[in-house]
Amino acid sequence: MTDLEALRRALQAPPDEQFGELDVTKIMATGTRIRRRRRVLVGGGAMLATAAVLVGVAVIPQLGGPAPAPPADTLTTAPPPSSTAPYTPPPRPPLGDVVYTGIKDAQGEVILYFVRTDVPNVPFGLVAAHMTASGPRSGVLNNETQRAGDAPGFHPIMGGGSETGTFLPVFGYFVGPAARIETKVLGKTYRARLARWSENPSVVVFWWPREAVPDQELLSKPVAYDANGRRLN
Amino acid sequence: MAAADEQFVEFVQAYSTRLLHAAFLMTGDRHQAEDAVQTALARTYAAWSRVQRDDAYAYTRKVLANHVIDAWRRPIREHATDHVPERPVRGDVAHEVIQRQWLLRALDSLGARERTIVVMRHFFDLSEAEVARELRVTVGTVKRANSRALAKLRVTVQPGQTSMVAGEGTA
Image (cartoon, rainbow over all chains, first blue to last red; front, side, top):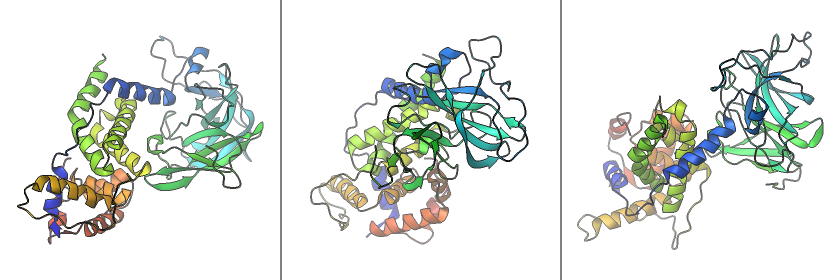
């Protein structure tokens, strides 16, 4: 037997291992890529080459509610750094059905829907936004930047932050016959909620509630399974 | 280089040795430790504008712990055993070397979460509440995992010792 102080001394003792020097330049480059994936930008069409933009939303019918208010695409957002005038992103009408996530907060319910993009080989991107009592408000567009937007497998995952001023869940889409998508957070497995895109059933939208995955930095690599439990990635 | 980048480089220079040491204790493998710390630092850099004003070290520590637990790959060791060896007695000629070997073999008997909690509690000197907050578990979970881990490590805790070390550290 030993005592706690001895254990603590042993833990604090310098290890024999000689660690390699960390490559700070490489670390910063990797961090920049991560940051770029989730940065919220406002700007013109060229900005769509990045993964995320704030978007205005077109009129979206509300489930069981009154007729929606005019589009909230004039919501004030931070001006782009290089611009002297505020930029108002154009409204992007949904492609296919809007997915209501059931996640509600003071701003309303979080909705997910696809929109058309102007990026070559990326015909669509996925928007997360809030459906407020007076209609939809600006959301975040998450679109592919590394490969074709409809290529099989996972595409960039976003969310877990407050880019639009209120929390958006971690969300993304998978192209393929996914019937179950899981990730691990601190060793616990969490199943994503899924919805098939009405325009293309091979595209599966997924998201995790905040209590399961509060931050995409706490997300381990997600895994998709088909209906027979076969791993797809 | 921008001021924020210079501050990040200074941050890496200031804390990388301790983070590597912690990651090595968590994984028992040098390469895994280096990979885990680089991943944690890259994610810290991605969030630098937000976390540098708060507690960047705590953020990196949290990401590191999460990464190690989720990416847990137990190193394959020859003669691996579940049996925790007796701690070597003082006076041994190669006492310190043997002690370090004992420590790593003893830590190998723990699960990923237990091992990480031991490192968070007794290497970083975090309180049970701080560990619970960083790992997003309850204080009770931390207490149980820590007690179980210390029992496996055959560590005795003197009366009052747990409370003595709890909540005092700044890591």
